[in-house]
Amino acid sequence: MNKITINGKTITHSGRGSVCISNNKITIGGVDIKDLDTIEEKTINIVIEGNVENIMTEDADITVNGTAGTVTTKNGNISCHDVTGDVETKNGNIMCGSVQGDATTKNGNIMGGR
Image (cartoon, rainbow, N blue to C red; front, top):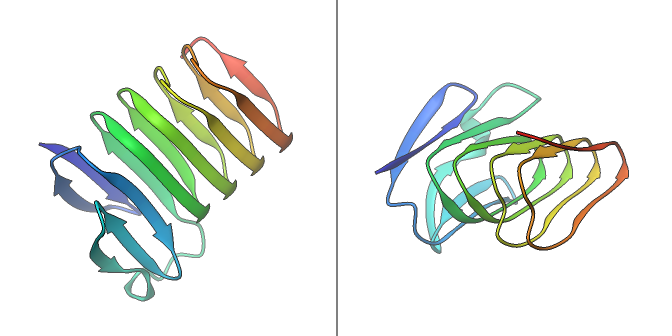
């Protein structure tokens, strides 16, 4: 089982399916997991222990301690091991191992070697 930690709150999941954080909801594989209104912090930090197929957020820093399919956030930094798809942030830095797709940021840096 994989673990996703969001601002210190841990959710255990299978590692299958997409992780989406949008409209104040956390969804894994199409199932609502937790209401973000219960998280008081303004900055959301997501840490995934294990692999994830896809993760999409609007405003969050993302760390994947495993392989990711696709990682996308509008505002936030991304740190992960290898990515089998694309990794993208509009405003933030990207630091990861090999990327089989594209790595893009509009306002930030892209660094390899994680």
